[in-house]
Image (cartoon, rainbow, N blue to C red):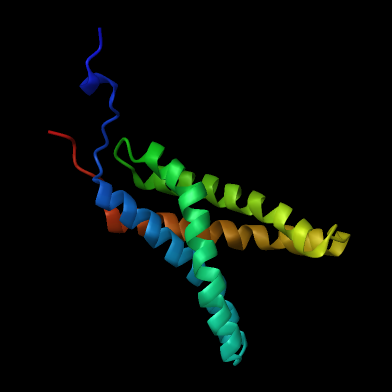
Length: 146
């Protein structure tokens, strides 16, 4: 018979490291989207909207999509290679969530709209990898449970 301790999943990362990783990913993801917009416009209402609307969306996406993946990945030490690969997977998941929202907002994308969306994919994936590597750098490799 298994004891309760055997059934628990142990992680080499602390709960605060996990929360910090998810929140950092949300903030960096928000910045990766809004900073380029902020530098191309001088409209303070757009900046305010990006904070009031964009930040909650970034945190919701990260806690709904990124957190479960990180919970799984952070059970073991996260190498630099794993950080890059898993951040690519997470970026693809987030990108795939973006597609239905583009349908809701603008209806069926035109062929040009699809080309623009696909053309944005490499930059989106690169931003995801950068975020994943920075999160791994901040959280560290973890420490084995004692």
